[in-house]
Amino acid sequence: MSGNSDDERLEELREKKMQELQDRAGEGGGDAEAQQEAQQRAEAQQEAVLKQYLTDGARQRLNAVEMSKPEFAKKVKQQVAALAQSGRVQGRIDEDQMRDLLKELQPEQKSFDIRRR
Image (cartoon, rainbow, N blue to C red; front, side, top):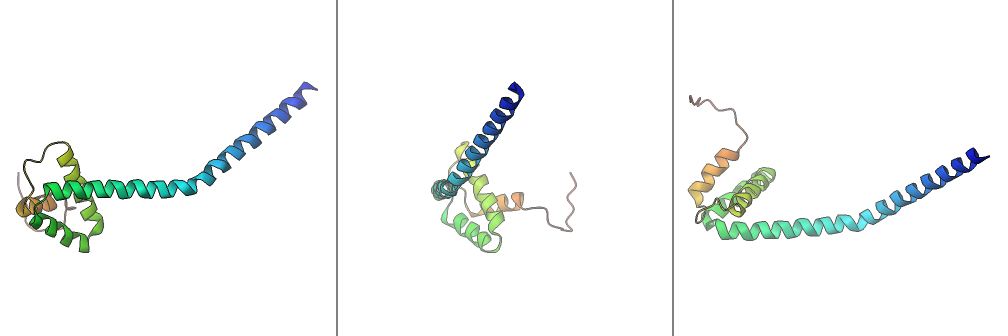
């Protein structure tokens, strides 16, 4: 007879686990909002860092890139913010440095200038 009660207990545990998972999934709705807020905060912080470390020219260049390649611009912004926060940016990044950075980070495009190293 004890075998039967074990089965019942397992079933109870299983139901309890399912209920927990459903509860957690229900809370996920509010989580998306929190995640979006966190992302907006991170972006605002990133913008502040960019304002601090980029000259107007560099920012304009980056904004121009953002118009045509939003995903790429996002990567560049993250890179600049990371460099700034790690203290590897001396002074401010000007337009020329931004141009170099964009070239460096750009996915390799098919070009015919073959550089030998």
